[in-house]
Image (tube, rainbow, N blue to C red; front, side, top):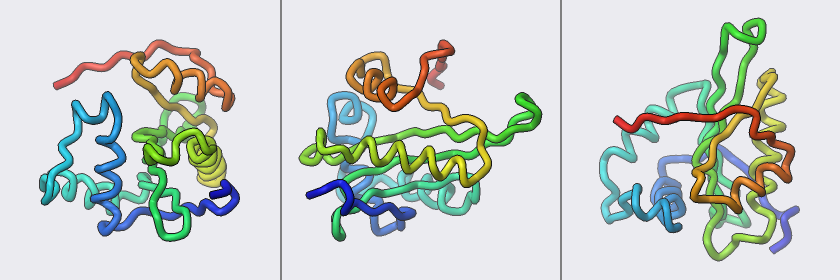
Amino acid sequence: MTTNQVTFREATIQDLDRIVYMLSDDTLGNKRELYTQPLPESYTKAFNAINSDPNIELIVACYDEEIVGVQQITFTPFITHQGGWRASIEGVRTASLERGKGIGTLLIKWAIQRSKERGCHMVQLTTDKKRPKAFHFYEKLGFIASHEGLKLHL
C-alpha cells in the first residue's frame, strides 16, 4: 500500500462494526470499548447522533474498499477568539496491521485541511498520557502542548 492510494469519506452505518473494532484494538481501547456481535445498541445510537449533526464528521480512511483508519472531527463555535470556530479531533485510530505506514499522518493532515475549509482558527485534540508515542506523533505534526486538559468521568 502507498499512502497516496488512501482516500477519505464520511462513515456510513455499514462501517460501524469496523470502526468499533479499530477503537477496541489497542491496550487502552480494549478496556473501554465493547466489541461484541451484535454491537451494543449504544454504538448505533451514537452513530445516528453524529450522523445527524452537521458539525460532527466521522471520517474513515480507506485503502481500496478496506477501512484502515478513523477519526471524529467536531466543529464548535466559541465566543472566545472573537467568535471563532474550533475543530476537535477525537477517536483517531489506524488499523493495527497498517500502523507505521503513514495513515495516521494522512488522517490528521486531512482533518487540518477540512478544519480550514470549515473556517476554523484552531484544531485541538487530546491524547491519553499513557500514549507517549501518540503525544510525540502529534508534536511532529505541529501540535503544541499549550494547555493542561482535565477530565471528569461521570
